[in-house]
Image 1 (cartoon, rainbow, N blue to C red):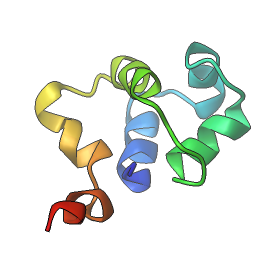
Image 2 (image 1 turned 30 degrees about the vertical axis):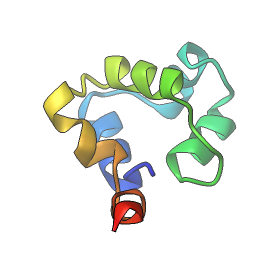
Image 3 (image 1 turned 180 degrees about the vertical axis):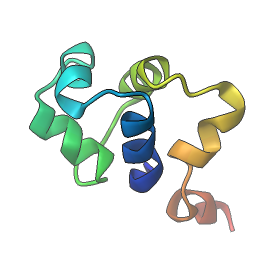
Length: 75
């Protein structure tokens, strides 16, 4: 699951908008918003694009994309 608050914060921090990032996914801004809000599934290719666009490093990946809901499935 996407950490919605952290992704939205990083978008602002990097001076970008969902409207600017969406074409690079590629999808509409509305669809990207749904993916970030965990309302629509996001695939690995899309996550990789988000990481590139938002300068999310490998050691930060879990903070942005591995939320408790997903992490707790192994318990």
